[in-house]
Picture 1: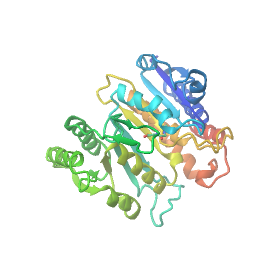
Picture 2: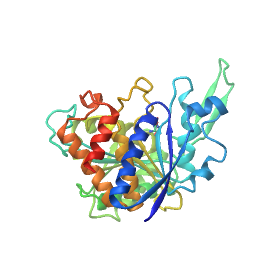
Picture 3: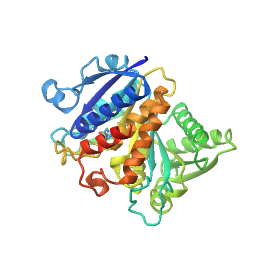
Picture 4: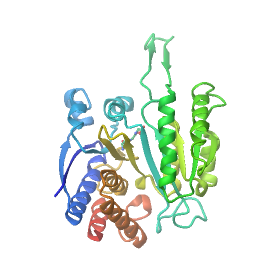
Length: 353
Ligand code: GGG
């Protein structure tokens, strides 16, 4: 029996609760579909930071490199500045492992209400592909005259032709593979960002010419934000820079019912490094420890991980179980209008497997 080596970082807040549900679901899927999973769980994150002054150990990347894949919960703590938690854990992992495609699907499932009227189940079925290693998140900048009245902060975006090409190509390949509208929408703000995003637009035009079977659209990010609300059913694959993709994927999550359903995969398509799977949501400290967080984003992320590892039957079974539980509407958490606990939702999924 093949066994996968999965390393997990539950992280902060509700991260522990939802990752626990994902691990339990993966164990059941392994039993049912004949593969083993050896989990190594790391206690990295904000509690680790309080003890050690850093979010993860100095050799964390070398440790994680041994994994077939990584499962992450959430990062963020009210007593630590957000840039410390994010730059101390998630962002170095994405960059060190060249996880340049952050894939964030948004599907309106049967039994889930969109805040927008008039969309039947699956009418919204899109995926945001966010560039994940450079752009506005590049760690380039600094402070001058720090904490003085004349303080200056410089933050530089980095857009490389190579970086744009590979993520745009990934989006086109995904549009070919998906059973969708075969459309790729590129999002920039190239009227204002007249260097970096003009380069992105040029690269998009060049790559699009290689995919004549795929329809294309280019939108400025303000128009894209409006159209995610006005006509979410028109989107299939959306490709955007690091920051824009992050923001827009919160919009696609909420028009599809809840951020509690938003899964994501940070993929190194070369497979030289492990990929990382995480719910889009953060640590939600306001509800941590109460056992009421929606575990479905974490479980859907675990399913994306199985698919990436080649366990497509098990992944499809988890997706099917989630669809059934949502359709039945008996076990559901508060974000979806229910009063259920994370454990009830987890158990409902596991019983369907
Ligand atoms: N699920 C991991 C998490 O806590 N994400 C919250 C977050 O702020 N992520 C930043 C990003 O993806 O750019």
